[in-house]
View 1 (cartoon, helix red, strand yellow):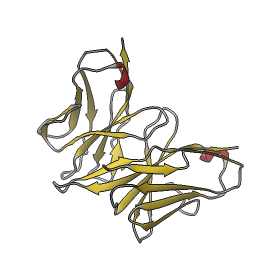
View 2 (cartoon, rainbow over the protein chains, first blue to last red):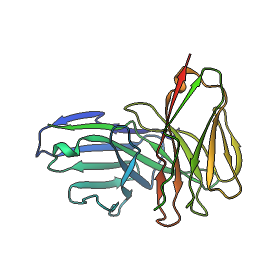
View 3 (tube, each protein chain N blue to C red):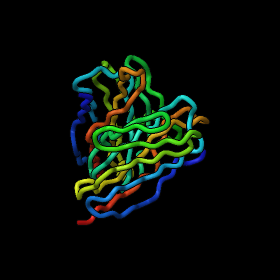
View 4 (tube, rainbow over the protein chains, first blue to last red):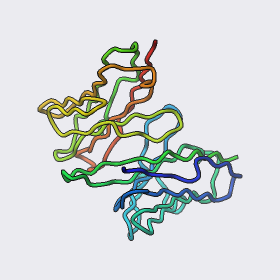
Length: 118
Length: 110
């Protein structure tokens, strides 16, 4: 259980184009999803928290107009990198939060999407 | 904002027990501590989660002292396939956000 998928697993695009990344919880409903970015040999950095049916909460320094997040259903959140530039090249990982029987929230992560902007 | 810190790297041999510690001085009162394993170019995989004292599952144990300012992930008998980066994830009392630790790169040798 608690499987999270991401699509695509990798994408290469030209500078100035937009890229959409999908995150799905396959066997559970997730009220909250998270988007992270990870640069080589670094830890995961939270970009934004996404709640179904409401606007995402972005972390300091993350441009909301550049990284558009839509959480249209309890199983799907999308991240769109608009007008991508080479410095946006990174590994993007989503997670979905599920509340267990003991009332504890646990994040389960997708496999990640490698974005390369030429 | 105090960082959630871990040793950068650790080396071990197959069959040995490995203990990885995470220091989290600003842990939020009500938050649990979660540990993840990450292989290159993959998302983190859940290992174990706990609030205090000791938690054990089929792959690891988690030790948390009474003050909860640190936690130790214990892998009982590592194998080559345990070579990975291990992260703790902890809630910060000042920001009320979950923060990943700096990560520990574990290398297991035959």
